Image (cartoon, rainbow, N blue to C red; front, side):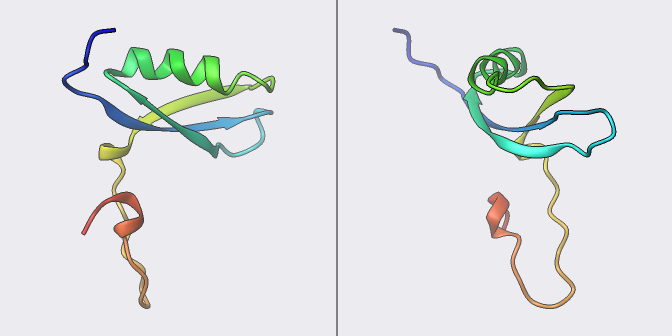
Length: 77
């Protein structure tokens, strides 16, 4: 199996019905966005989803809390 030079973590969000908000259902690690979509579909296909999206973790922008807390949860300092 070839060694991949670059992989990225993608957050997976989905919803069951159109009127519901997207919710975080997990993560996948993939070399690119197309593979992340494929991995998400294969791994999280146990439910009938209305919509599923993948977002590179590196694209997530933390919002600093007003009172204490930390944004380190997303890997930002």
